[in-house]
Length: 228
Image (cartoon, rainbow, N blue to C red):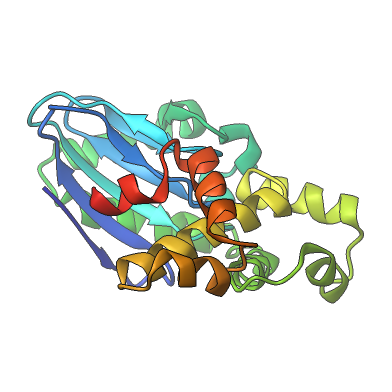
């Protein structure tokens, strides 16, 4: 069982799931950081993945998550995104006593998702909001903007843009662009667009290029993801 919905925090998604425990769940990279609560593991932070993460849970394990939009996580968690890349870490490792207080609120029987949302919003306000460059870069790269052109638009050289992207997203602009392009392609395919047309619409050279890129990032070809 899995469900999600948008929340008042712009671009963020609140989701919940209960594990069947029969096989790993393939979580695709998306440039996001998640604040997580598990009935078996407590409070965690999921960093930005470069390739698909295979999540293994016990049968009946309940998960509640807050998926922050690309570029917002560092302001909420207080660390650069690249320090969390490809990692799942206890929230206490980042927040210390503050994480204990959040855990106490969850243990009190309060609505877990509401607590996570309130905490994330408060942290974001205290940090002065996210770096506004994050949303712009993610939007332009998601739309297929060439990395060089995007760098010129924001007045940064290639190295400076790469460093900024590491802090905001956990990887450089080319990797982020590949990940966002893959997600755009899969969204088109799930909406019923044939893969041959998806490849052109999403900016791939051809369908073979699309298949190779998805396999590199997701670990399986597009057809397997679409059947799942």
